[in-house]
Length: 392
Image (cartoon, rainbow, N blue to C red; front, side, top):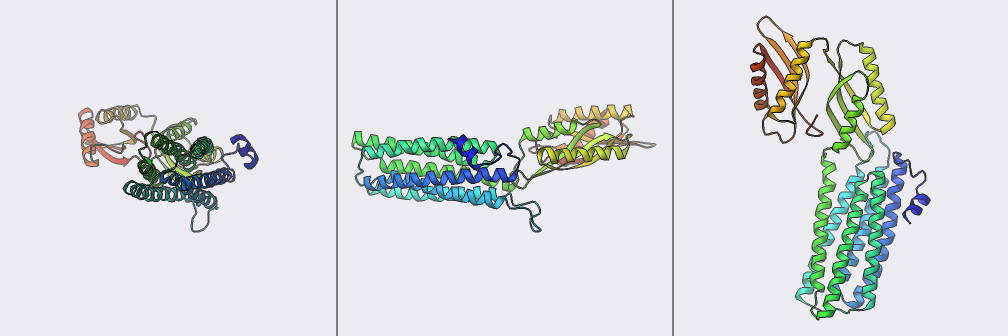
């Protein structure tokens, strides 16, 4: 079924790097889920009202909230596909993240409302009718939701969409909620003890908790979450694969929505090389990232003296020494300026997030280590903060 839907409604489905194809995936997923959730809401709502079951009605309302969430997701994908303009030069990709946040808030609101209805049913219990129709509609709902979870997970992974991945998780949670409702109905029938209100309370609490997690996940990219470490490692490896590149550091990745990433980095190259050739190489690296991965990359050239063995050995020793303070530390851009009484040793040190030492404390510790090894050295250290991962 999933293959048929993708093949029929997503032309050129394999080209997921194309923004238009990605948008089409999102629209197809959202419309499919709207249809399924509305059908489930109508079916469970009718049975729940006839049976007088607040938990089944609660589950039906949950499906209606899911449909509303799918509508918001659809609008998010549509608005995110708008091209850049004068006021938004980086495009409108973050609309997808905003849509995810709205969906999360809606889920929380529905959960709170269901908690109130369930408490009222517990305080003022009413008999619940149990029938084959109740079992059939709940089992059918679980099967549909299982398919929807697999459907959204597959499409979400195909286009790397957190919104669709969240929808898949929500569908999986619905299966658990519906199973709880069905179990309470069966137990109530067998024991004559009405668990309907308590089951509704559990479903409402579960929905609230899921909504809270969705809010947290939706806010994270808007605030600027750390990029995927595997993606950062891939960028580093790609830069280092070009001949003449000696190192890279100060990598930053800015996310303006799915498929709209911008990055910058410093690249170390031999100071003795031809600057025109090295500039051309950096241009080629930037262009390769743009063409092959859609990543807008800006690279800065850092010249490194390679024909001075003493400076090279000092750099290697200091790099090892700082790892004795914290294995995540690293240095770059080291250069030596000798004088009649001392030698200025100038370099940057990357301090990862969570480092126990302040910039001043770290600078003092490193300076002390270097002076023990090189008594004439006077360190001029710039402390950089890491913006991507513990290792720069």
